[in-house]
Image (spheres, rainbow, N blue to C red):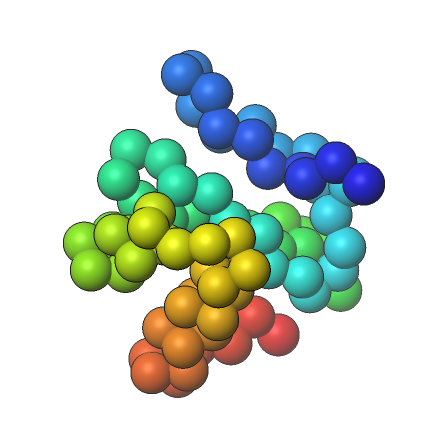
Length: 82
């Protein structure tokens, strides 16, 4: 399946029809990490992380490590996606 979030010079393109419910998707755009997920009501939710240390970690990490970085960030701030 194609990744439902793409960044382009004009902005971020999101394809919610390709998103799984309660799965976290992300991209880096304009020095921010943008988080997206679709909930059980099929509402699209968006959050942005602009903290430089987190953005830099995501930019410098391997793809397989990014989800762990984001999960740790959410756990430390007591955030949930459900």
